[in-house]
Length: 461
Image (cartoon, rainbow, N blue to C red; front, side):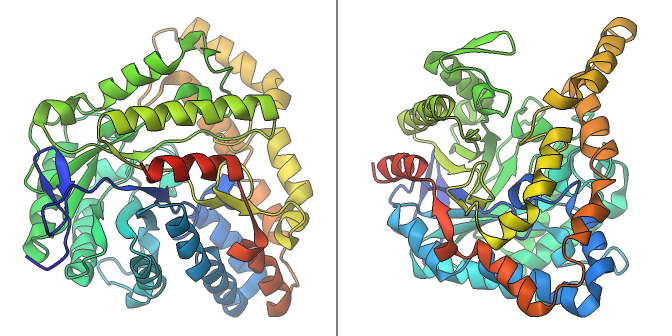
């Protein structure tokens, strides 16, 4: 075996000396896979890029995104994570960095430039990385975070998209097969296979394809229905980890008090533990390691409410420690909702976007980070119609309420905002764009101290 690789041994992850390793870290959301609530744009990443290309032109467009990738994570970010005692960064990736839809199966080598840089920056600080393909060709789930402009996961309907994913993973695995600080590969974030019948055969195919070029690295497989459902799986292949995502209802933007009621259900630490046990039952039954690939509350800027969310976070970390689970919290850096660090409210980026962000919040278009308070007169009649006319309608993955939010808020009301967002950058020269993007540099960001204190405490236990 290549020296230094992590592997699985029964229910544990171990290093090359056979010593148990608990991975504790963060997801680098919004970087090589962008998300609207993290950086402020509307709708999905590809649509944002198309809108910006129109106003910036090819040269300034390339400059904009190259600087964004450079500033969003640099040496100071890696040193900061190490100072917290964290030993893992999960890196979400959009396939478009490595392959164009117009040239399928042609790997873009330039995609490795920034990924190599961050993998190596983390390695210098003794931090492992897990490569997470967050957005796949054809969209593996029904939501914006797979860069999906629709509500349909076409990946599961077209062999072409599956073939491209296998080809891409062989390229990624071939590139990193000898890197000891890459903890492993997370080939598909939050799959949404509506039938539940295709995911295990595809995982088997993907496992064999990766193993053909890299026999050593751990492969981390998410459960179905956004990494919450494992009933369709029957085996754990050698040196693999099945991973759950464990967002707790009180931590969502609409969450109620904690302990207390959210959406009519009471939540306290015992209920949070019950949910965790349900989501990890397959791993415990098979005697394999547990990794919680995503979890973590969002923060509303209300001291009392945020204090309850910090307590929720403590309860979750206490549970993970009790069961020996590895974890990576979502997410490292953003513009103020959830990150360990975030852009300053008076930064050039936030100042430019402030009126636009207020409009997004008013329209409730970011379903992760905004509420529908100001558009209830639109949403409520639709909910009532569905309850009355289609009482048994429960579309995959999360029912009729999810579908209404997805179609109305995240598509119908979000897409008209794209041109308005892009217009904010029209006419700016490279120096002005650079000044805006430097808002994401670590030294210009604010640290969310209560959150970081909790993570430091549990990372060092």
